[in-house]
Image (cartoon, rainbow, N blue to C red; front, top):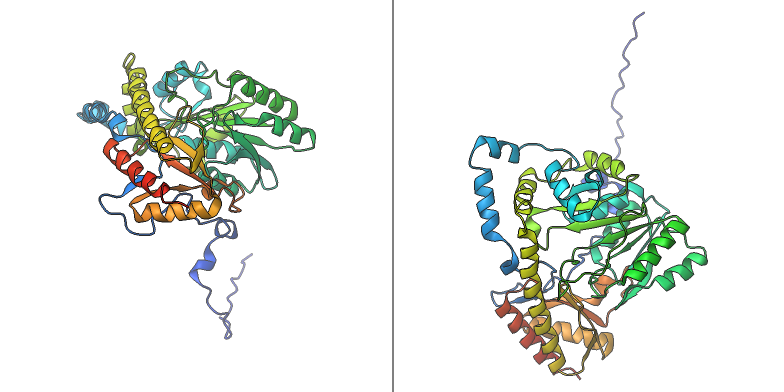
Length: 410
């Protein structure tokens, strides 16, 4: 039996051609397009001081070591070939073992990622669905808002302060019926607030996760940067309710695009399966560089020690300059990390005036509204100063300009 093909004549009344922009999916078109960071209104000149980004100082990066290792890796086909080849979705097995040894977990629970934000995204995309609730810090790291938005889940802010996430407030809301899928927090030297979550609160948060059925997503890029090198005991990784995202961005450099996720056994296979469908793997060359450097006995800890000294000096410099400028800003000294989070006592109007005059003077920083998890304009009277990235002489110049402007506020 033969089946005839039927042809249709073109309609004489063709519908109007749609715009190419109509091809964009409704889901993607609905995503916010606003920048999560301050963008200078005028083109920055060579003397412009940028106190926006929480990037590492160039002086703290192991440039010479990375150059040396890269040259060695690419010197011949035996090492250069594998360094430029495809690799496993979960990451270089040797690098996973090195990280697992530092974390004290099975290497099967380690997934190499393209930085900490990528790990956060993979973890949330693996579990969150439209209609779910994700608790986040309030204020919050701005890109977290975009990640949760992409999953379709609803954001529920919980306050953070000098002692990190307010676990008492969270528990009260859980008793009132809140049922999140995940609780996201930056526990060590919070971004932007700078607070440090005590060990007792971490344990309580895990207990709540086990009681109410959510998981804790710890985004922890600044943990290594306590001024004295001592760290608060972290979340217990033997709990199947704890997921931790780390990064090499603050130590080896953000351009390598490397981080790692510590996932419980129930989640790790799903994250790897999702990874296979998204970007397949992290850079094999970057992983080979990191693996080689981390294999050197004591090398990474020495790097962290030098970085801590540098950022402690910059934090002290920033705090001293702001304190000497008067009482226009209200802030807690950072316990560590890269930021000062301050409230302008004159309120939102004074904060806006400060931002405008500071940019006119050639210095820019992040205004507080970027850190409102609901994007409703809250924290308009706040600002975040990142003291980590600018070279020493630029940081000094920026602080001199900023404090001069502070003294002009009414």
